[in-house]
Amino acid sequence: MKSLVMIGGGIQQTRAVELLKQSGYHVIITDKSPAAPCFEYADECVIADGTDAETIIAYILQNRARLNIVGVFTLVNLTTTAAIVANACGLPGIKPAAAVAGQNKSIMKRIFREKGIPTPDFREVQTKQEAIQAFEAFGGQAFVKPATSFGAQGTRSVSSQDDLIAAVEEAQKFSNYQGVLIEEEVTGHFIDLNGIYYRGRFHGFGIVDSYFTTEYPAGCPISPIETYVRCPSEVDKATRDTLFKLLEEATRALGIDFGPVGADAIMTDRGPMLIEVAPRLHGAASSLYMVPHSQGLKPVKAVADVMAGGVLDLSDITPNLDMVCVNELPLWQPGLITNIEGYEEALKVPGIVHIFLHKKVGDIIEPYRNSTMIPCGMFAEGATEQEALASLAIAKETMKVTIEAI
Image 1 (cartoon, one colour):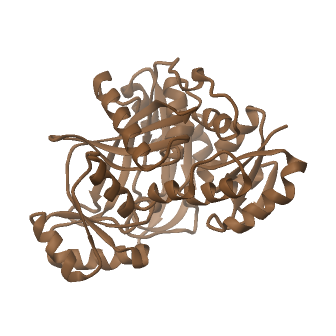
Image 2: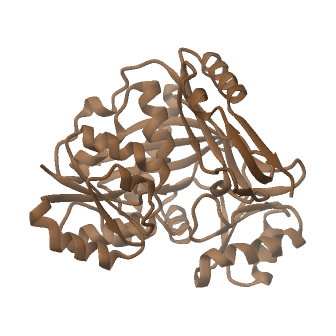
Image 3: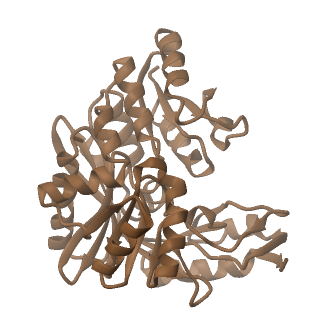
């Protein structure tokens, strides 16, 4: 039996382990936490921080022959580690430098600018004065972003110099010496998309509509938080083709031409733009639940087969269903969670695909700052969006959450 190493074993990745095992793989999970949710489902468990390439490399070298380890990959923001490990162990993967370019927004945006990839304009800054100058150049409205982060941590829309300075200070906590990006603020329809390279050829699949809030409560600016996702996207075929072409051009420009790729895109009044790309599937939730349930695709199997050095089965990324799947991410009021009841019953509501609970009784919901703080994700499917939403409404009524203000 072939073994695959998956770096990162959080709650959203548990379904991936199940799918990999169904596809015939022996699954090895690495995670820094001894209580990682994926460990319960894995065949082998390795306690190692996702940035600790040395430990993961040593494990593979020591156990490669015994376990027939044929590939390594990740579904989360640990693509540089996966590339370093693959390179060191002689496994299929991309060059580490390409992974870094797909992880570091500063490097990525420089390449986009050089290659003419449409993306929001930006300035790289190191000091408060440079930030103010860039902010003024964008007309007093901009996004502040750290060069490296995930879940929109340290990212915020600003419209005053006071907000700007506070946002830059927060972003610097994530970027260290790498600086901060001041980016023009563009508006439009947000879209997530996936693709995969196999034998040098790009295949696009799995495109979804994504909706965000940048205020919570109303009037209080926060990092963009995803609150609703719809699959498949409602954009027309010509737009899909344009977006997939951009994804291919952008990833090739970064030196990525193997394995999975994903992107955040936006349709603006100036045309489609790419906000960022990465050498992994975009959004574990979308790839594991929404795309399979709405279109019948098997993204995880496709990625596993390619990263294991096997053959890509095109039927795994060719739609064969015509359903709609939605994901609602409710923002529960901040406070202490004192009771959650009806969760199991809500899971049984017809049309409900899955419900992620990221918080439990006794946890405190802090004022929202970014997407990593979302307490819950609810997935539903239906023949139409309205049908899926009707199932969600019943599930939300069934699952009661009690929160006390603190």
